[in-house]
Length: 284
Image (cartoon, rainbow, N blue to C red; front, top):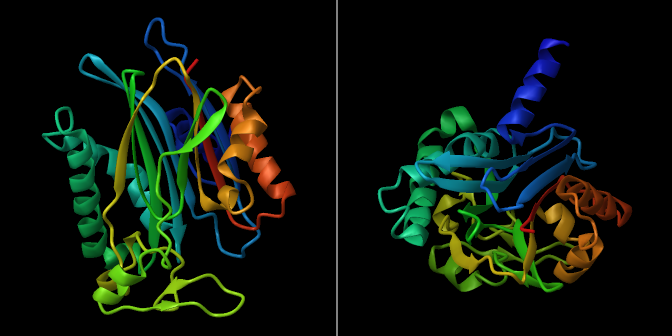
């Protein structure tokens, strides 16, 4: 086995990765809980390197088990999403109020992480990244946060429910303009902040940060008997598939890794040209 292959195996075992195509799976160690996850990434047709990164792992913290899941979709370089993959969850779990005021702790950690990225812009570059994170606490509570247009959807009794918020410039025009920015809306193109970025919130992007927000939307969803599975994916999937279409496409696929791979292949068959990253977490 080459050094590159060993590194790839180490990354997959650790639950995070990025390459032209990558895949992996894992499961909860809690007795009585049959929670599994799988992920699959496919590089898009753009000429730049893969800019999506994934975290998907179960972690024991004291007497608790946390499922840590994230999609980081970079733009103008891969250094920022790579940094997020390595640091964001650590920053969240280091917050003193994580166990008592979880949503507030996540918001604070997002802000701190963004500040660090901006301070390190000489090393990390001028690019940025969207993010959707999900923390599954003891298999009972799912806390989702996001900035940008990567999305989290849960399936309950066959019905798709979006847990994240798509931060589109057109929806946040007033906030952007209040900071001195503008939203372009040219024919044949999507709305963009200052004519450049197609999302209203992101990590990094130092040159635009005065007009962008890095505050996440955070929501908590209880995992009851109706909850079947959750999907986290970059916009390479959501540009070509609706929430309900995605849920319907994999509801009968019991293996989470196979389900994630099926969604990426379906997005490709629908001519998605962007990088596509997908995580599926099955609760039963």
